[in-house]
Amino acid sequence: MASFLSNIFKLTTGTMVAQMTGILLIPVITRIYSPEFFGVAQIFLSIAAVLLVVSSLSYNYVIMLPERDEDSMNVFMLCIVCVLGTSTVTGAVIIGFSDWFGAVFEMAMIADYLIWLPIFVGFNSLFVILNGWLSRKVKYGVLSRGIVVNSVSTRVFQIGSGLIVASPMGLIFGSMMGLALSNLFMFRGLKEDVGLIKTVTIERMKGLAIRYKEFPIYGSTASLANSMSWELPAFMLAYYFNPTVLGYYALAIMAVKLPMAMVGTAISQVFYQKASEEMNQTGGVKTVVREVHTRLIAIGIFPFIIFIILAEDLFTFAFGVNWLTAGTYAQILAPWLFAVFIVSPISTLFSVLEKQRILSYFEFMTLCTWILVFYVGGASGNPLLTLALFSVCGMLIWGAKSVYLIRESGAGYRSSMLSLTRHLLLSIIISLPLVLGVYIGLPLLLLFGIAGITAVVYYLVIFFTDTMVRNEIMGMVQGLIPSKHTDWMERLGPFR
Image 1 (spheres, rainbow, N blue to C red):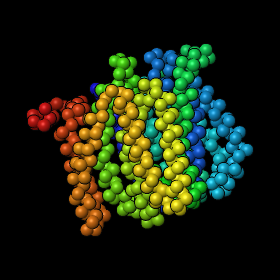
Image 2 (spheres, rainbow, N blue to C red):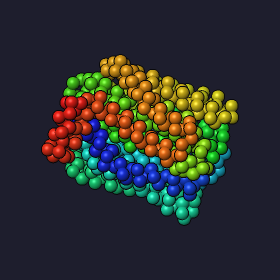
Image 3 (cartoon, rainbow, N blue to C red):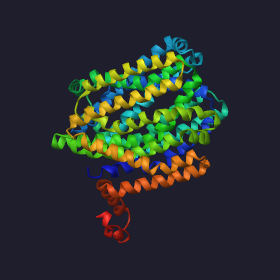
Image 4 (cartoon, one colour):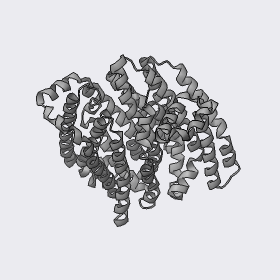
Protein backbone atom coordinates (compact mmCIF):
# COMPACT_ATOMS: atom_id res chain seq x y z
CA MET A 1 0.00 0.00 0.00
CA ALA A 2 3.06 2.22 0.29
CA SER A 3 2.94 5.29 -1.98
CA PHE A 4 -0.54 4.34 -3.24
CA LEU A 5 -2.06 7.68 -2.29
CA SER A 6 1.12 9.42 -3.44
CA ASN A 7 0.68 8.03 -6.95
CA ILE A 8 -2.99 9.02 -6.91
CA PHE A 9 -2.00 12.55 -5.97
CA LYS A 10 0.47 12.63 -8.87
CA LEU A 11 -2.45 11.92 -11.17
CA THR A 12 -4.82 14.37 -9.49
CA THR A 13 -3.18 17.28 -7.69
CA GLY A 14 -0.91 18.15 -10.60
CA THR A 15 -3.86 18.23 -12.98
CA MET A 16 -6.53 19.64 -10.70
CA VAL A 17 -6.31 23.26 -11.85
CA ALA A 18 -6.31 22.40 -15.55
CA GLN A 19 -9.04 19.79 -15.13
CA MET A 20 -11.14 22.31 -13.23
CA THR A 21 -10.56 24.74 -16.07
CA GLY A 22 -12.08 22.19 -18.44
CA ILE A 23 -15.04 21.74 -16.11
CA LEU A 24 -15.52 25.47 -15.60
CA LEU A 25 -15.69 25.95 -19.37
CA ILE A 26 -18.77 23.71 -19.61
CA PRO A 27 -21.10 26.61 -18.60
CA VAL A 28 -19.75 28.54 -21.60
CA ILE A 29 -20.47 25.57 -23.87
CA THR A 30 -24.04 25.15 -22.55
CA ARG A 31 -24.73 28.78 -23.44
CA ILE A 32 -23.48 28.24 -27.02
CA TYR A 33 -25.01 24.86 -27.84
CA SER A 34 -28.65 23.86 -27.36
CA PRO A 35 -29.79 20.66 -25.58
CA GLU A 36 -30.72 19.28 -29.01
CA PHE A 37 -27.13 19.71 -30.28
CA PHE A 38 -25.86 18.00 -27.11
CA GLY A 39 -28.23 15.12 -27.86
CA VAL A 40 -26.98 14.65 -31.43
CA ALA A 41 -23.34 14.80 -30.33
CA GLN A 42 -24.08 12.30 -27.57
CA ILE A 43 -25.36 9.73 -30.08
CA PHE A 44 -22.09 10.10 -32.03
CA LEU A 45 -20.00 9.72 -28.87
CA SER A 46 -22.08 6.74 -27.71
CA ILE A 47 -21.56 4.88 -30.99
CA ALA A 48 -17.84 5.70 -30.79
CA ALA A 49 -17.67 4.45 -27.19
CA VAL A 50 -19.14 1.08 -28.22
CA LEU A 51 -16.59 0.73 -31.02
CA LEU A 52 -13.76 1.81 -28.73
CA VAL A 53 -14.05 -1.21 -26.43
CA VAL A 54 -13.56 -3.70 -29.27
CA SER A 55 -11.01 -1.69 -31.25
CA SER A 56 -7.99 -3.28 -29.52
CA LEU A 57 -9.78 -6.55 -28.62
CA SER A 58 -9.11 -5.77 -24.93
CA TYR A 59 -5.39 -6.42 -25.36
CA ASN A 60 -4.81 -2.92 -23.92
CA TYR A 61 -5.52 -4.48 -20.49
CA VAL A 62 -2.67 -6.92 -21.06
CA ILE A 63 0.00 -4.19 -21.35
CA MET A 64 0.24 -4.00 -17.55
CA LEU A 65 0.53 -7.74 -16.91
CA PRO A 66 3.76 -9.22 -18.42
CA GLU A 67 6.86 -9.17 -16.22
CA ARG A 68 9.14 -8.20 -19.14
CA ASP A 69 8.90 -4.83 -20.91
CA GLU A 70 9.74 -6.53 -24.22
CA ASP A 71 6.54 -8.57 -24.01
CA SER A 72 4.53 -5.49 -23.08
CA MET A 73 5.86 -3.60 -26.11
CA ASN A 74 4.80 -6.48 -28.35
CA VAL A 75 1.33 -6.29 -26.81
CA PHE A 76 1.38 -2.50 -27.35
CA MET A 77 2.04 -2.98 -31.06
CA LEU A 78 -0.55 -5.76 -31.23
CA CYS A 79 -3.10 -3.25 -29.94
CA ILE A 80 -2.09 -0.75 -32.66
CA VAL A 81 -2.62 -3.38 -35.36
CA CYS A 82 -6.06 -4.25 -33.96
CA VAL A 83 -7.07 -0.57 -33.86
CA LEU A 84 -6.06 0.01 -37.48
CA GLY A 85 -8.16 -2.97 -38.55
CA THR A 86 -11.17 -1.86 -36.51
CA SER A 87 -11.05 1.71 -37.84
CA THR A 88 -10.87 0.46 -41.42
CA VAL A 89 -13.90 -1.81 -40.97
CA THR A 90 -15.78 0.99 -39.20
CA GLY A 91 -15.19 3.34 -42.12
CA ALA A 92 -16.52 0.79 -44.62
CA VAL A 93 -19.66 0.14 -42.55
CA ILE A 94 -20.38 3.82 -41.96
CA ILE A 95 -20.21 4.61 -45.69
CA GLY A 96 -22.98 2.10 -46.32
CA PHE A 97 -25.21 2.55 -43.25
CA SER A 98 -25.01 6.17 -42.06
CA ASP A 99 -28.56 6.94 -43.27
CA TRP A 100 -29.83 3.84 -41.47
CA PHE A 101 -28.51 5.16 -38.14
CA GLY A 102 -30.26 8.47 -38.75
CA ALA A 103 -33.55 6.68 -39.45
CA VAL A 104 -33.33 4.44 -36.36
CA PHE A 105 -32.93 7.36 -33.97
CA GLU A 106 -35.20 9.68 -35.99
CA MET A 107 -32.23 12.05 -36.10
CA ALA A 108 -31.33 12.63 -39.75
CA MET A 109 -28.51 15.08 -39.03
CA ILE A 110 -26.40 12.41 -37.28
CA ALA A 111 -25.76 10.79 -40.69
CA ASP A 112 -23.70 13.83 -41.72
CA TYR A 113 -21.23 13.35 -38.85
CA LEU A 114 -20.69 9.60 -38.75
CA ILE A 115 -18.03 9.76 -41.45
CA TRP A 116 -15.71 11.05 -38.69
CA LEU A 117 -16.17 7.92 -36.58
CA PRO A 118 -13.11 5.95 -37.84
CA ILE A 119 -10.77 8.86 -37.07
CA PHE A 120 -12.36 9.50 -33.69
CA VAL A 121 -12.20 5.82 -32.71
CA GLY A 122 -8.56 5.64 -33.80
CA PHE A 123 -7.56 8.67 -31.72
CA ASN A 124 -9.51 7.47 -28.70
CA SER A 125 -8.11 3.94 -28.89
CA LEU A 126 -4.55 5.26 -29.08
CA PHE A 127 -5.25 7.40 -26.01
CA VAL A 128 -6.31 4.27 -24.08
CA ILE A 129 -3.28 2.26 -25.25
CA LEU A 130 -0.86 5.03 -24.25
CA ASN A 131 -2.57 5.20 -20.86
CA GLY A 132 -1.82 1.52 -20.37
CA TRP A 133 1.86 1.84 -21.25
CA LEU A 134 2.47 4.98 -19.15
CA SER A 135 0.72 3.38 -16.18
CA ARG A 136 2.94 0.32 -16.48
CA LYS A 137 6.04 2.51 -16.50
CA VAL A 138 4.66 4.51 -13.54
CA LYS A 139 4.97 7.73 -15.57
CA TYR A 140 1.99 9.30 -13.88
CA GLY A 141 3.30 12.82 -14.39
CA VAL A 142 3.28 12.48 -18.19
CA LEU A 143 -0.06 10.70 -18.06
CA SER A 144 -1.68 13.36 -15.90
CA ARG A 145 -0.48 16.15 -18.15
CA GLY A 146 -1.82 14.28 -21.18
CA ILE A 147 -5.21 14.10 -19.50
CA VAL A 148 -5.03 17.85 -18.89
CA VAL A 149 -4.25 18.53 -22.55
CA ASN A 150 -7.24 16.42 -23.56
CA SER A 151 -9.63 18.09 -21.12
CA VAL A 152 -8.68 21.71 -21.75
CA SER A 153 -8.11 21.54 -25.52
CA THR A 154 -11.43 19.73 -26.01
CA ARG A 155 -13.31 22.60 -24.34
CA VAL A 156 -11.32 25.30 -26.11
CA PHE A 157 -11.98 23.81 -29.56
CA GLN A 158 -15.66 23.25 -28.73
CA ILE A 159 -16.05 26.89 -27.72
CA GLY A 160 -14.11 28.17 -30.70
CA SER A 161 -16.09 26.04 -33.15
CA GLY A 162 -19.38 27.06 -31.54
CA LEU A 163 -18.56 30.75 -31.81
CA ILE A 164 -18.00 30.29 -35.54
CA VAL A 165 -21.02 28.07 -36.22
CA ALA A 166 -22.97 26.40 -33.42
CA SER A 167 -23.74 22.82 -34.48
CA PRO A 168 -23.19 19.27 -33.18
CA MET A 169 -20.03 19.13 -35.29
CA GLY A 170 -18.42 21.71 -33.00
CA LEU A 171 -18.82 19.39 -30.00
CA ILE A 172 -17.56 16.39 -31.99
CA PHE A 173 -14.62 18.27 -33.51
CA GLY A 174 -13.54 19.56 -30.09
CA SER A 175 -13.51 16.05 -28.63
CA MET A 176 -11.50 14.77 -31.59
CA MET A 177 -8.89 17.54 -31.38
CA GLY A 178 -8.52 17.04 -27.63
CA LEU A 179 -7.65 13.38 -28.15
CA ALA A 180 -5.26 14.12 -31.02
CA LEU A 181 -3.28 16.72 -29.07
CA SER A 182 -3.12 14.61 -25.90
CA ASN A 183 -1.83 11.63 -27.92
CA LEU A 184 0.96 13.76 -29.40
CA PHE A 185 1.91 14.92 -25.92
CA MET A 186 1.87 11.44 -24.35
CA PHE A 187 4.05 10.01 -27.12
CA ARG A 188 6.85 12.01 -25.48
CA GLY A 189 6.61 9.61 -22.55
CA LEU A 190 7.70 6.75 -24.81
CA LYS A 191 11.02 8.23 -25.91
CA GLU A 192 12.96 6.21 -23.31
CA ASP A 193 11.27 3.02 -24.50
CA VAL A 194 11.74 3.43 -28.25
CA GLY A 195 14.51 0.83 -28.23
CA LEU A 196 12.00 -1.82 -27.19
CA ILE A 197 10.37 -1.57 -30.62
CA LYS A 198 13.31 -3.61 -31.95
CA THR A 199 12.02 -6.56 -29.92
CA VAL A 200 8.66 -6.56 -31.71
CA THR A 201 8.13 -9.50 -34.03
CA ILE A 202 5.09 -11.05 -35.63
CA GLU A 203 5.84 -14.39 -33.98
CA ARG A 204 6.09 -12.82 -30.53
CA MET A 205 2.91 -10.81 -31.02
CA LYS A 206 1.12 -13.95 -32.14
CA GLY A 207 2.41 -15.91 -29.14
CA LEU A 208 1.26 -13.25 -26.69
CA ALA A 209 -2.09 -12.98 -28.45
CA ILE A 210 -2.59 -16.70 -27.84
CA ARG A 211 -1.24 -16.53 -24.27
CA TYR A 212 -3.83 -13.91 -23.34
CA LYS A 213 -6.57 -15.16 -25.64
CA GLU A 214 -9.22 -14.91 -22.89
CA PHE A 215 -9.00 -11.14 -23.09
CA PRO A 216 -10.41 -10.87 -26.65
CA ILE A 217 -12.71 -13.87 -26.18
CA TYR A 218 -14.22 -12.91 -22.84
CA GLY A 219 -12.73 -9.50 -22.07
CA SER A 220 -13.85 -7.88 -25.32
CA THR A 221 -17.25 -9.47 -25.03
CA ALA A 222 -17.59 -8.23 -21.47
CA SER A 223 -16.24 -4.78 -22.39
CA LEU A 224 -18.66 -4.55 -25.30
CA ALA A 225 -21.56 -5.46 -23.02
CA ASN A 226 -20.27 -2.95 -20.46
CA SER A 227 -20.01 -0.20 -23.04
CA MET A 228 -23.43 -1.03 -24.40
CA SER A 229 -24.85 -0.87 -20.89
CA TRP A 230 -23.26 2.57 -20.41
CA GLU A 231 -24.38 3.87 -23.79
CA LEU A 232 -27.76 2.14 -23.98
CA PRO A 233 -29.47 4.95 -22.01
CA ALA A 234 -28.47 7.42 -24.73
CA PHE A 235 -29.74 5.14 -27.50
CA MET A 236 -32.99 4.35 -25.70
CA LEU A 237 -33.70 7.93 -24.64
CA ALA A 238 -33.19 9.02 -28.23
CA TYR A 239 -35.48 6.24 -29.46
CA TYR A 240 -38.33 6.71 -26.96
CA PHE A 241 -38.15 10.46 -26.39
CA ASN A 242 -36.25 13.16 -28.35
CA PRO A 243 -32.81 14.77 -28.75
CA THR A 244 -33.64 17.43 -26.13
CA VAL A 245 -34.27 14.84 -23.40
CA LEU A 246 -31.07 13.10 -24.47
CA GLY A 247 -29.23 16.43 -24.28
CA TYR A 248 -30.36 16.94 -20.67
CA TYR A 249 -29.19 13.42 -19.83
CA ALA A 250 -25.85 13.99 -21.60
CA LEU A 251 -25.10 17.12 -19.57
CA ALA A 252 -26.20 15.43 -16.33
CA ILE A 253 -23.80 12.55 -16.91
CA MET A 254 -20.99 14.84 -18.07
CA ALA A 255 -21.27 17.19 -15.11
CA VAL A 256 -21.14 14.36 -12.58
CA LYS A 257 -18.63 12.06 -14.29
CA LEU A 258 -15.99 14.70 -15.05
CA PRO A 259 -15.15 15.63 -11.46
CA MET A 260 -15.71 12.03 -10.40
CA ALA A 261 -13.27 10.87 -13.09
CA MET A 262 -10.53 13.22 -11.85
CA VAL A 263 -10.15 11.00 -8.79
CA GLY A 264 -11.80 7.76 -9.93
CA THR A 265 -9.70 7.26 -13.06
CA ALA A 266 -6.50 7.94 -11.15
CA ILE A 267 -7.47 5.46 -8.45
CA SER A 268 -8.32 2.83 -11.08
CA GLN A 269 -4.96 3.16 -12.82
CA VAL A 270 -2.91 3.18 -9.62
CA PHE A 271 -4.94 0.34 -8.11
CA TYR A 272 -4.48 -1.78 -11.25
CA GLN A 273 -0.73 -1.27 -11.10
CA LYS A 274 -0.52 -2.00 -7.35
CA ALA A 275 -2.85 -5.01 -7.53
CA SER A 276 -0.84 -6.48 -10.43
CA GLU A 277 2.37 -5.91 -8.48
CA GLU A 278 0.98 -7.47 -5.29
CA MET A 279 -0.38 -10.44 -7.26
CA ASN A 280 3.04 -11.08 -8.82
CA GLN A 281 4.85 -10.76 -5.48
CA THR A 282 2.47 -12.49 -3.04
CA GLY A 283 -0.04 -14.40 -5.15
CA GLY A 284 -2.96 -12.46 -3.61
CA VAL A 285 -4.57 -9.00 -3.56
CA LYS A 286 -6.67 -8.95 -0.40
CA THR A 287 -4.59 -6.31 1.39
CA VAL A 288 -4.79 -3.68 -1.34
CA VAL A 289 -8.47 -4.43 -1.99
CA ARG A 290 -9.44 -4.08 1.67
CA GLU A 291 -7.56 -0.83 2.12
CA VAL A 292 -8.62 0.80 -1.14
CA HIS A 293 -12.31 -0.09 -1.17
CA THR A 294 -13.04 1.17 2.34
CA ARG A 295 -11.29 4.43 1.60
CA LEU A 296 -13.11 4.89 -1.68
CA ILE A 297 -16.31 4.85 0.35
CA ALA A 298 -14.89 7.29 2.90
CA ILE A 299 -13.63 9.73 0.28
CA GLY A 300 -16.54 9.57 -2.15
CA ILE A 301 -19.76 9.43 -0.19
CA PHE A 302 -19.92 12.98 1.17
CA PRO A 303 -19.63 14.86 -2.16
CA PHE A 304 -22.48 12.76 -3.55
CA ILE A 305 -24.68 13.54 -0.53
CA ILE A 306 -24.02 17.26 -1.03
CA PHE A 307 -24.65 16.95 -4.75
CA ILE A 308 -28.03 15.26 -4.24
CA ILE A 309 -29.07 18.14 -1.97
CA LEU A 310 -27.94 20.94 -4.31
CA ALA A 311 -28.06 19.45 -7.83
CA GLU A 312 -30.93 21.50 -9.31
CA ASP A 313 -29.59 24.79 -7.88
CA LEU A 314 -26.08 23.96 -9.07
CA PHE A 315 -27.21 23.28 -12.64
CA THR A 316 -29.32 26.42 -13.00
CA PHE A 317 -26.54 28.53 -11.48
CA ALA A 318 -23.73 27.02 -13.59
CA PHE A 319 -25.40 26.20 -16.91
CA GLY A 320 -28.42 28.50 -17.08
CA VAL A 321 -32.13 28.16 -16.35
CA ASN A 322 -32.66 26.13 -19.54
CA TRP A 323 -30.78 23.23 -17.92
CA LEU A 324 -32.86 22.82 -14.74
CA THR A 325 -34.19 19.49 -16.01
CA ALA A 326 -30.60 18.25 -16.42
CA GLY A 327 -30.08 19.02 -12.71
CA THR A 328 -33.10 16.88 -11.84
CA TYR A 329 -31.73 14.05 -13.96
CA ALA A 330 -28.34 14.32 -12.23
CA GLN A 331 -30.01 14.23 -8.82
CA ILE A 332 -31.76 10.99 -9.72
CA LEU A 333 -28.61 9.40 -11.17
CA ALA A 334 -26.25 10.37 -8.33
CA PRO A 335 -26.79 7.22 -6.14
CA TRP A 336 -25.98 4.96 -9.09
CA LEU A 337 -22.90 7.02 -9.99
CA PHE A 338 -21.68 6.79 -6.39
CA ALA A 339 -21.90 2.99 -6.63
CA VAL A 340 -19.88 3.19 -9.86
CA PHE A 341 -17.29 5.40 -8.16
CA ILE A 342 -16.58 2.99 -5.29
CA VAL A 343 -16.68 -0.22 -7.33
CA SER A 344 -15.27 0.73 -10.73
CA PRO A 345 -11.60 1.06 -9.59
CA ILE A 346 -11.54 -2.42 -8.06
CA SER A 347 -13.24 -3.82 -11.17
CA THR A 348 -9.77 -4.06 -12.67
CA LEU A 349 -9.48 -7.17 -10.48
CA PHE A 350 -11.34 -9.06 -13.21
CA SER A 351 -8.18 -8.60 -15.30
CA VAL A 352 -5.68 -9.11 -12.47
CA LEU A 353 -7.39 -12.35 -11.38
CA GLU A 354 -8.06 -13.32 -15.02
CA LYS A 355 -11.81 -13.63 -14.40
CA GLN A 356 -12.90 -12.31 -17.81
CA ARG A 357 -15.54 -15.01 -18.17
CA ILE A 358 -17.30 -13.97 -14.94
CA LEU A 359 -17.02 -10.33 -15.99
CA SER A 360 -18.79 -11.16 -19.24
CA TYR A 361 -21.65 -12.73 -17.27
CA PHE A 362 -22.01 -9.59 -15.16
CA GLU A 363 -21.98 -7.32 -18.18
CA PHE A 364 -24.56 -9.31 -20.10
CA MET A 365 -26.79 -9.35 -17.02
CA THR A 366 -26.41 -5.58 -16.79
CA LEU A 367 -27.20 -5.10 -20.47
CA CYS A 368 -30.33 -7.25 -20.28
CA THR A 369 -31.47 -5.37 -17.17
CA TRP A 370 -31.03 -2.02 -18.91
CA ILE A 371 -33.02 -3.18 -21.93
CA LEU A 372 -35.87 -4.20 -19.64
CA VAL A 373 -35.67 -1.00 -17.58
CA PHE A 374 -35.72 1.32 -20.58
CA TYR A 375 -38.43 -0.70 -22.29
CA VAL A 376 -40.68 -0.31 -19.24
CA GLY A 377 -39.68 3.31 -18.65
CA GLY A 378 -39.88 4.26 -22.31
CA ALA A 379 -43.32 2.70 -22.64
CA SER A 380 -44.49 4.85 -19.70
CA GLY A 381 -43.50 8.00 -21.57
CA ASN A 382 -41.95 9.43 -18.39
CA PRO A 383 -38.18 10.09 -18.53
CA LEU A 384 -37.99 10.75 -14.77
CA LEU A 385 -39.47 7.34 -13.95
CA THR A 386 -37.16 5.74 -16.51
CA LEU A 387 -34.05 7.27 -14.96
CA ALA A 388 -35.19 6.46 -11.42
CA LEU A 389 -35.54 2.77 -12.34
CA PHE A 390 -32.18 2.95 -14.05
CA SER A 391 -30.49 4.44 -10.96
CA VAL A 392 -31.95 1.92 -8.49
CA CYS A 393 -31.10 -1.09 -10.66
CA GLY A 394 -27.63 0.34 -11.25
CA MET A 395 -26.92 0.48 -7.52
CA LEU A 396 -28.03 -3.13 -7.09
CA ILE A 397 -25.95 -4.44 -9.99
CA TRP A 398 -22.76 -2.60 -9.02
CA GLY A 399 -23.31 -3.72 -5.43
CA ALA A 400 -23.48 -7.35 -6.58
CA LYS A 401 -20.27 -6.87 -8.57
CA SER A 402 -18.58 -5.44 -5.48
CA VAL A 403 -19.64 -8.41 -3.35
CA TYR A 404 -18.21 -10.88 -5.87
CA LEU A 405 -14.86 -9.09 -6.21
CA ILE A 406 -14.37 -8.70 -2.46
CA ARG A 407 -15.15 -12.39 -1.96
CA GLU A 408 -12.73 -13.49 -4.70
CA SER A 409 -9.97 -11.29 -3.36
CA GLY A 410 -10.36 -12.75 0.14
CA ALA A 411 -10.67 -9.27 1.64
CA GLY A 412 -13.98 -9.95 3.44
CA TYR A 413 -17.16 -7.89 3.44
CA ARG A 414 -17.19 -6.69 7.03
CA SER A 415 -14.80 -3.75 6.67
CA SER A 416 -16.56 -2.45 3.53
CA MET A 417 -20.03 -2.68 5.07
CA LEU A 418 -18.88 -0.99 8.27
CA SER A 419 -17.20 1.76 6.24
CA LEU A 420 -20.34 2.35 4.16
CA THR A 421 -22.64 2.47 7.19
CA ARG A 422 -20.34 4.64 9.28
CA HIS A 423 -19.57 7.20 6.58
CA LEU A 424 -23.15 7.38 5.33
CA LEU A 425 -24.37 8.23 8.84
CA LEU A 426 -21.50 10.67 9.31
CA SER A 427 -22.28 12.37 5.97
CA ILE A 428 -25.97 12.72 6.79
CA ILE A 429 -25.26 14.20 10.23
CA ILE A 430 -22.67 16.69 8.97
CA SER A 431 -24.86 17.76 6.02
CA LEU A 432 -27.92 18.54 8.22
CA PRO A 433 -27.12 22.31 8.33
CA LEU A 434 -27.17 22.33 4.52
CA VAL A 435 -30.49 20.47 4.41
CA LEU A 436 -31.92 23.02 6.86
CA GLY A 437 -30.57 25.88 4.74
CA VAL A 438 -32.26 24.50 1.60
CA TYR A 439 -35.51 23.97 3.53
CA ILE A 440 -35.73 27.57 4.78
CA GLY A 441 -34.71 28.96 1.38
CA LEU A 442 -31.30 30.53 2.07
CA PRO A 443 -29.59 32.33 -0.86
CA LEU A 444 -27.61 30.03 -3.14
CA LEU A 445 -24.21 31.57 -2.41
CA LEU A 446 -24.80 31.11 1.31
CA LEU A 447 -25.72 27.48 0.65
CA PHE A 448 -22.45 27.05 -1.23
CA GLY A 449 -20.60 28.46 1.78
CA ILE A 450 -22.34 26.03 4.13
CA ALA A 451 -21.53 23.16 1.77
CA GLY A 452 -17.86 24.15 1.79
CA ILE A 453 -17.71 24.34 5.58
CA THR A 454 -19.41 20.96 6.01
CA ALA A 455 -16.99 19.42 3.50
CA VAL A 456 -14.01 20.73 5.48
CA VAL A 457 -15.50 19.31 8.68
CA TYR A 458 -16.15 15.92 7.08
CA TYR A 459 -12.66 15.50 5.64
CA LEU A 460 -11.03 16.69 8.86
CA VAL A 461 -12.91 13.92 10.66
CA ILE A 462 -11.62 11.43 8.06
CA PHE A 463 -8.09 12.76 8.46
CA PHE A 464 -8.12 12.40 12.24
CA THR A 465 -9.80 8.97 12.32
CA ASP A 466 -8.23 7.12 9.36
CA THR A 467 -4.66 6.17 10.25
CA MET A 468 -3.61 5.07 6.76
CA VAL A 469 -4.88 8.22 5.06
CA ARG A 470 -3.27 10.38 7.72
CA ASN A 471 0.09 8.62 7.47
CA GLU A 472 0.12 8.88 3.67
CA ILE A 473 -0.76 12.59 3.74
CA MET A 474 1.77 13.27 6.48
CA GLY A 475 4.41 11.44 4.48
CA MET A 476 3.71 13.58 1.42
CA VAL A 477 3.66 16.78 3.48
CA GLN A 478 6.97 15.91 5.13
CA GLY A 479 8.43 15.17 1.72
CA LEU A 480 7.51 18.64 0.50
CA ILE A 481 8.00 20.72 3.66
CA PRO A 482 11.08 20.74 5.93
CA SER A 483 10.53 18.65 9.05
CA LYS A 484 11.08 21.62 11.37
CA HIS A 485 7.80 23.05 10.06
CA THR A 486 5.84 19.83 10.66
CA ASP A 487 7.24 18.71 14.02
CA TRP A 488 4.30 20.33 15.80
CA MET A 489 1.95 17.99 13.92
CA GLU A 490 3.79 14.93 15.16
CA ARG A 491 3.52 16.16 18.72
CA LEU A 492 -0.26 16.22 18.50
CA GLY A 493 -1.78 13.07 19.91
CA PRO A 494 -4.10 12.36 16.94
CA PHE A 495 -1.12 12.36 14.54
CA ARG A 496 0.84 9.68 16.34
